[in-house]
Image (cartoon, rainbow, N blue to C red; front, side, top):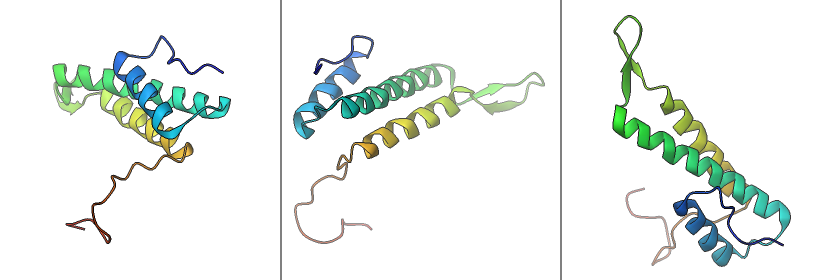
Length: 106
C-alpha cells in the first residue's frame, strides 16, 4: 500500500500528507484516495489564493465595473472540497482544550 505522498502535490500538501498519515494512521486505499483528493483541492485553493493576493479580490468587467475575482469561487469550492474530504476521513479538526467545557468566547 502506497504511503508516499503523490509527487504532483505541492511541498506543503506533501508535508500535510505525511503529518496526517502519521497522526491519524490512514492506511486503507479508500482513505488514501480521499486524502489525496482533499490535498489536491488544498493545492487548488492555495493556487487561487496566490493569484487573488497578486491581482486583488476584484477585477473590472467589460463595462469597467468592479466584480469579484473569478478565482474567489475556485478558492471557495476548493476549500469546501478539502474540508469535505477531511470530514469523510472523520478527522477531529477541533483543537484540544486545556479544560472541560465550551471554548472561551462562544
